[in-house]
Image (cartoon, rainbow, N blue to C red):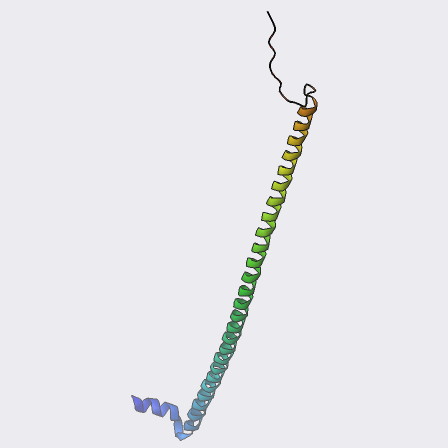
Length: 126
């Protein structure tokens, strides 16, 4: 059976051996070209992986910087909020004191004329 295949490849009269050899060379060249393409693709993928790694490192650095800025901003806002609460509390205390002083002065002025002092209680004689 191998002999029949060999005879078909050689063709009649022995002139077909050259064409079989040429066919094998073409197939080999095709395989070589395919392998070169594959090697180029692998190299390109390697370059792509390197670029992705670089971008990942840059992203990591950016994320760390963002975190530092966010923490700093959060602390600033916390202190700003505390100051605002203290200012509002001081204003409320001042208003309460002003109202209390105004009431005390009003009570003092509207007293019996004796400066708001309570005198002895007089009892009517029988």
